Length: 424
Image 1 (tube, one colour):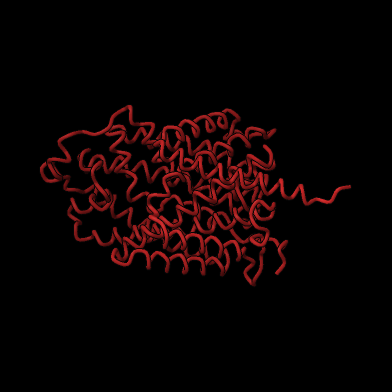
Image 2 (tube, rainbow, N blue to C red):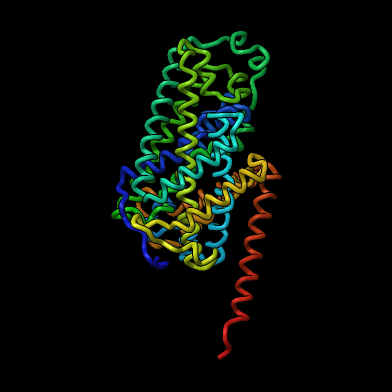
């Protein structure tokens, strides 16, 4: 196996868009509206619009950079190229550590949907199966993503029809206690937007696959903006329909708002279809996450910020097989040894730092297209930091500790390498 072997450019606009949209329409779409409604109340739609605006700033920055630097690794590569080694490392380490925990959480969520009594075993099996798909090449990954995306989209259409056609439950029918108080308000819009933002963040997966996209200068910007536009329309439409169908209290208190939208309609018998769609969404998001983390680990290993063997690309399907296997092994270890849902909160902070660095890197570019003016990079940078520091303190402190461990580890490794370097 040649460690310097390059990945193959096999993805077109449709495949790349599918991977991005499949990432954004993950399991989060089935749960995120409830906590967001609890914070923003009747201003939920405003929170969606605000999250979409921040996502647009980040998306155009990612698109500009990915078109210019079409290599695996996303902002890890852009940060190194435009800002220096340390900002790049901070982005890469935050992405790999945070999203690896997210992989474990997504796998466990799938297991809880499919077989609650055997959730961990099912989650481990899902990780093994999806890693195997990835090892058969990026075109197999794209194919399975398209299949899962079709299932999720069909489910969302069904939910939308149920919410639109009703009947719409009254406060008594939906639960008088839940509906008695209208939650949230204008003051909760910003943290609600922070929650909604993470549902939009899947377009980063397209950028991390930059080395496997045909005609990247044309394909990547189109795929990122198409995936983001589609996700925004879907989220905005669902927010409007859910608010018109369910009382504010019921929406905020629901553990599964899309499932409740069907249960409180004339299509209640179709509730299992929504559960199947949620399971498919978990798999789609997990598949994209494993792929993105593996490619970022590959890029970091090429620069020796992670162990060099992880940069090895080989096999008939030219995949970073050691990086993929290492990611799967760590995810399985987390599933078997930790309370996964308690360790993933910090990943939200890491994602926002990642995109802040993306915007800072894009700002340094000399030329900007009409749809991606320089002021958008400033707005994106400020918005990411603002949302990051409105997160719960435990999330901020948790990820700050993880980032500090990574920075300290890299500093020590660089010192050791410097000491071993032969003197002239």
